[in-house]
Image (cartoon, rainbow, N blue to C red; front, side, top):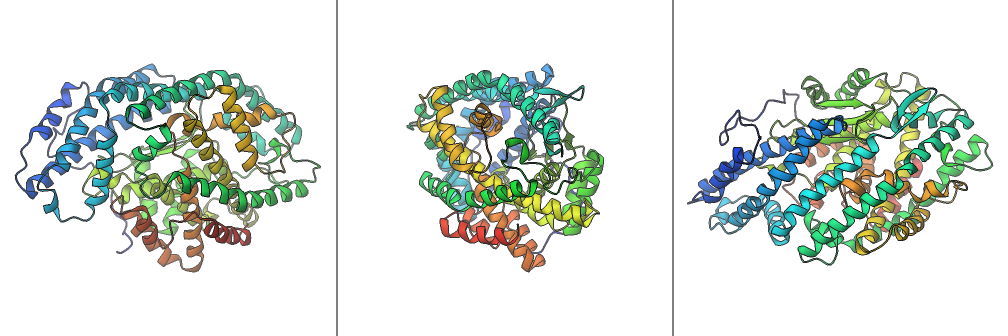
Amino acid sequence: MLIPEPAPVGTNKKRTFITPSLVVKTWDSISGYYNDLREREIKDAADLRLWLSDRSELESMIQEDLAWRYIHMSCDTSNKEYSDAFNFFVSEIEPNIAPFTNALNEKLLNCPNLNELNDSRMEIMLRNIRKQVEIFREENIPLFAELQQKEQHFATIAGAMTIEVDGKEVTLQQAANYLKNNNRQKREAIYKKIVARRLADREALDHLFDELISLRHQIALNAGFNNFRDFMFAALGRFDYTPEDCFNFHKAIADEIVPLTNQIMEHRKKTLGYDELKPWDIDVDVSGNPALKPFNGSDDMIDKTIKCFSDIHPFLGNCIETLRNLKHIDLESRIGKAPGGFNYPLYETGVPFIFMNSTNSLRDLVTIVHEGGHAVHSILTKDLDYVEFRSTPSEVAELASMSMELLSMEHWDFFFNNPEELKSAKIQHIEKMIESIPWIAAIDKFQHWIYTNPKHTAADRKKAWHEINTEFSGNVVNWEGQEEAFDFTWQKQLHLYQVPFYYIEYGMAQLGAIAIWRNYQSNQKETLEAYFNALKLGYTAPIGAIYKAAGISFDFSLPYIKELSGFLKKNS
């Protein structure tokens, strides 16, 4: 399979089943299409292929409609019109769609012409559909609607968090830039302001989390599972690994990566000349230079990202250029904007939307290339036959994005003209990447505890997180006087609130990305071609086969992590 040539992208697929001008305003505006699919007679394989294509067209349109509601609400959490539009969809549209989705799944699985398709790619899709039918329960429909609305309340709480710095009101994302200031007293003061603002909402966030846990546990019980962890392994289609594999991953990270983070922190403490390293000391440049500023504003960020991506391959730059032309991008941090960053696939348009909270920092450079990797993945899969083929599992989606962080790093001279700044940027990113892996393990281990102990109290949860965070945070940073901050760091992780159990995938994909980066250092052309080939598969092959196509292994065992840890030591 050849590396894709640059080509125009971004035109909507032509609708052949649903009305071209259709907009989702009420359930009645789309119910006829679902009834058509449910009642339509399928006589042969050709009819089945058309039925699958029509269903995919409808589901792509529905998905994109919901996507835009979510995007608009995230861009301005204070806008009631946006939140009302999103809540209307999840409370009035999705509950009506859910039983039809199950009925259509059953119709497909029971279709006598299914074996006539002769398409090996269908097996991945069918195993997922079989699992969805298995766990579907009518009584969970209203619970999912309620859950989605509550999950979005986290963005409202977090989006309203601001502090005052130098007489200006700034978001916590903007305030974090001050933690790179060379003045230690200033860093400490800002850090304590950030912590105080987060802790001001700790009870509200604890209460919200209790509500989410209760709803999620009930959904699991209704579906015949003992706990929400086991339900989510089924719902996420985790056919390729088990909870036991996750536990082994946690242990391997504690054994191999945490000591590496300790070495990084010890070097930081020694270089800074401090007797002890405090939480406000971990982001400042140890060289004493000002914080790196890879761009100046969102326009400059996009320009430089396009140049960087084009230098890797013209197709990549073309992808980001397309997002800019379609205005599928919102980058800068502002008050009222939801925290975090994401790439939201748009299955009808074929070109996703990138959302982030940039403050012109190195971390923002990493975020834009990360989300850019997701965007490239979306565009490479946009022409696959069915929406299920384009909906890749997180373990693959994050491989695309995390690999792009490291592949692009070899081309960061577009962001840094000064060789010393470029060198510093690379070292800082590699160190932050290493430090992030134990955090990933901690969040995942915490989730296993949360959902297998659903009756726990907020006090129990605080104690459990303290123990887990202690295991993975190393022994160099001194948290004395900041014990409360240490025990509530989990509350800043939006995945816990909005996308439960979506986190260990980052760790698995990070290992894969490190392996791809290692290959790229030896043979750029071959590695890039393998990367493209893997991404083009979408979800038409098992995870292991997709990783193999990328020239790496889907492996998170102790020996493999030890091997990659050795590579990182040589490159950090």
